[in-house]
Amino acid sequence: MIQKQIKIVILEDSEFYNSILTKQIRSFTEVLAESGKVAFDIQSYTYAQDCLRNLKEDVNIVFSDYYLGNGTNASDVLKQVKEICGNCQFVVLSQTEDESIVQKLIDNGAFAVLHKDRDALPKSCMIIEDILAKLI
Image 1 (cartoon, one colour):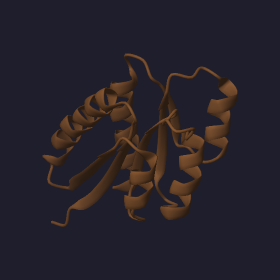
Image 2 (cartoon, helix red, strand yellow; image 1 turned 180 degrees about the vertical axis):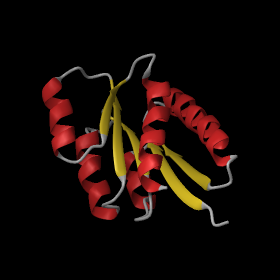
Image 3 (spheres, rainbow, N blue to C red; image 1 turned 45 degrees about the vertical axis):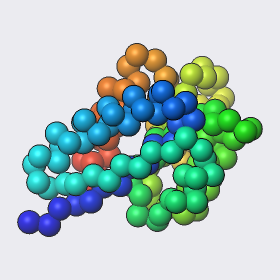
């Protein structure tokens, strides 16, 4: 049986939240991989420049914080990600409640924008399930 390889990238400038989100997604995807139908490759970055420099066209999902430091935000990264991997699903996690920012992200191709609250981690896993249902 041929396994489908799913590549996930996490971009979060807070090392603490990056670690928590990465662990949550790794734990969740390990369970999904037990079926033998799918394998996951998860890469994690704290700097947008490092992420974009290493981004490949076959990445399936990018999870990104909105405010990324050095004047960079997810809107900037989204444009560049779409140029590199046009079929990639871009998910933003943010503390912003500004609806105009959320709408702009969706209009520019973000798959989803999650409010960074206590439900953000389980919602991230549900988003992976939604995207997988379309890929497999």
